[in-house]
Length: 359
Image 1 (cartoon, rainbow, N blue to C red):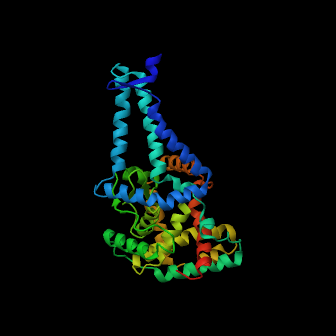
Image 2: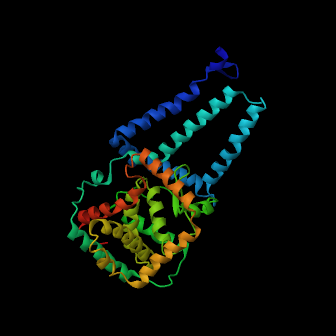
Image 3: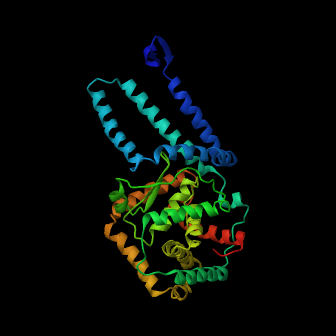
């Protein structure tokens, strides 16, 4: 039995559990952050920017997604190790220790590299603003104002240059990061292609941020009129913002303040779609009247976006993805799960109240 707890390193003997001490200690710190939001805030403000800068410096040179490489290695090595164990070239004890240790370090890596951001105080607490009261007349006027701005921002057949849009969004984050209390520059935000794009398209996923290697991914299946908003959202994640609603808020702030016609239109187009969802609940009797103010050409764009994704969407894969991601968000203290995306409307009202200016 003694051999079960002993591993050899040269001539010295160490208890096998020593290998688990470091990740378990770090996990204890992560649990503390989950219980003490102020501690998580200190970590995100002081440690995460350094980690993001180092990780992104090491990984932004690769033109491909390093997360793809990690997944491929896992897909190859896990079955391969099981085969070796079955062929008795690898003991079960060694296999289970390696497997558990790998899982522990992946969890540690995820949270220490980015995920602790889920545990920081919410937007209202950090910015010292109250939750806005539900005021039907106020929200109707609020939505109508954004619809008017959307109508003025409309462009037909927009010029679409990925690098130009990237530079514009980066410049806007540099300009506005102080008001949004985001660390800057916080590393490099190179947008990468991923081998998972066909699967993402089938699931209806327009983009995601890879916390393991600090990489931004945007699905190139996206239409030009939605691409800038998605890019701004994923870049917000890279600044250490974990909440989806808050990333949507910053995407709105960034895109609607742009002078670039496509970026500005994309910002208002996506923001109004969230406002309409809330308007339907708050003021159902005036919903048709207010939405009737939207330029018919813009309504055609909304239909084009919906039809574009429906062509490629696999309902089963999309439903599974929604359930898995919903569970993931709720596990990380995002109580509304995937519904949290639309909560940006409340944050937007709070932001405007706090700044007392229009974007």
